Image (cartoon, rainbow, N blue to C red; front, side, top):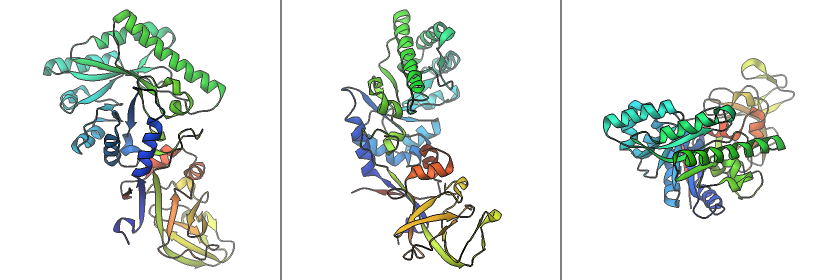
Length: 377
């Protein structure tokens, strides 16, 4: 038995990842750059391994959430340009510059802070301006009455000493959601994004080398919004291709083992809270996975897992380190049998429904104590 596969593990197919990268890349307009989003440990897949694969395959840029994530990549030998999407305090500007990192700038005040520190150190920081076109999170507010103030703020930010404004971007909030209202909202975000860029160029003479707004949802549903660079996140890992356009392959398979099998009498209570009681004599398997590994407790009594020749319904409250599943109707299920939590047989979307969440959360929730096993031919 492979030591990494002794209890619970996640199999990561680098071949599928490469396939997905090429499938997306091949549908981009000529000259359009590819930015791979590898924040949150590459959505649980392992940021360093994923980044090295993307680097070798020819990706142009990477994106992370914070400085710590960027430094993990730099210290691991990744040399591609890296965009930090979240906030970095100006006190770390020297670290940003010395490690050739690109920082998102989300308002004039932050631009001024970076500029002052850059001037003090005699350095130049490469930045991408973030526009808030409707996400209402980070970025220069630019809708309605905020438009002129936004344009002025962007122009002023780009003219500050010590800043090199390479790019401008925004983030769509419903590009992956169906419906006419969501389509109209996304198209309005896109139109506003282009209006701000045009006004900044016309009034301030600022031209950005890289304009990017196409996240996973936009790549699938609005390919015309690719512009100069695209930012696939979940799509890169094989999820979110609801049109089947790209023919993507899921990259993660979460697997555990049966550690014990018990024969329980009818009317036996199972696990914490006594939320499941056997209706008849039951062959109950104990699995080596729990919510500390990333299996949501909310799924208790709501899901099934692929084991041997069938599917075993999960029974009782999911515990921290283990859970139970009924294998009464799966005679070939035995101690040490593999159990697929999600992957080729157990659809992650079924588990999402049970957990009332989305694939992003389940992938990112696979904890650090779960070893990643990287597969490639």
